[in-house]
Each structure stands twice: as structure tokens, then as C-alpha cells.
Length: 237
Image (tube, rainbow, N blue to C red; front, side, top):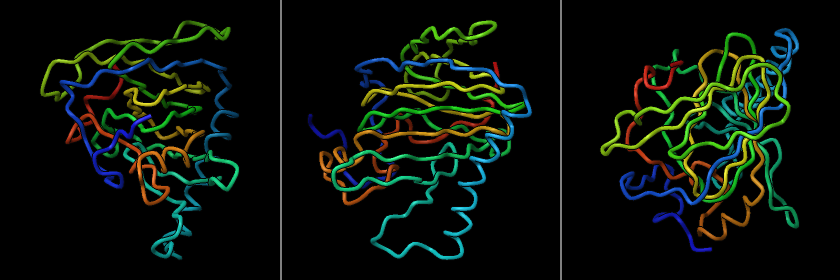
């Protein structure tokens, strides 16, 4: 495979939305609904792991040139729970979502230089809007109740007209998503209780392929917009 980035270590690189074509589709599998109490307990416990890691980072900053495990993404704070090592090229992140209503801005549509697997988990009064420039394939996993809400609208603040295809993850839910390399996606949590457990099965491979200097996932992100939209562009329809 050829490299995707113009500048391998650039953490805010963006490409032309007008010329981008997704090579595949994301696949989303609804797994289960939980009662509010256990859903909140799981999400709160995982978010606490991330928050404790960031508290340690503030008190004892990672020295330059070494792996920084507490990082910040547009969607939320993250913690690299498991790093790659020789003979094992995957890593694992936990992300504590920001509530877009509190921050007042949406995360941008983007793509990655390697494939991703994410498990999204929500608690009470919280949903996650998962969007892409192409329809998201929702797989049948004997999901209880009504199908997930899907919405198609115009991508906000785009310099050229592009459709945005959104699936809404409901409260108190677990949903898995497979994100192929180079496929657009966007996550925005509406509410205070949402986390992602994310596995990157080719972290070391893509770092070498792109010519990056280290494991910084923001450098493995390519945005499809220069600026973020205001929160009203990514709250519930």
C-alpha cells in the first residue's frame, strides 16, 4: 500500500473534500441494550481509567521523545491502554467522549491511515451520532427493539455539497464498528456518558508505511475539513 499523508507527522492535515471518494463502507453491529444502572457503571468505570491517566500526565508529564499514553482527540480524551511491542503490532485506546453541547463544537469528518475497530458504549441520557460520507452498513445482530435511527442530510459547512449519512447509537447501548483504511467517519456524543474501546490492528505497520516518527494517532488522522462546525450541526435530529 502507498502512504496516504503528505506530511507524515502532521496532526492537523486535511484533504480536499470535493475530490475525496471513500474506498469502502463502515460496518456497524448493534450488540446489546443494558438497563440504565449497569450501563452507567460500565461507562463511568472506563471513563475513570482515562481521567486518571490524564491526571497523572498533568502531574508527571511524559518526557519528550517517549510514548505519551494520555492524548487528546477532537472527540474526547484518550488513554493508550496497550501499546504495540515487537511481534505484536496492534494497540488499544480508551476514549472518554466530550459532550458536544458543553464544548459547543462538533468533531470533524476524517479518515485514518489504517483500519480501526471501535466499540461504542453509552449510558443514560447519552447518544452518539456516527456519520460518514457514504452509507453505513448496519449488520443484523438480533438487536432488541426498534432499528437504529438513520439520517441523511447535507454535510454542514462543506465547501461543496456532500451528503452526510448518520446512524444514532441510543442510550445504554453497546455498538461495534469496523472502519476500513481511508473511509470517512465522524463521532459526536450528545450527553455526558459515552466511551469508546478502540483497537488499531496495524498501528506499527501504518507508522512505518507512512514514515511517521512515532505512535501519535492524531498524526494518523486526515481531516476532511479545516474547521469544526458548531454543536448544532451534530446534535440530535
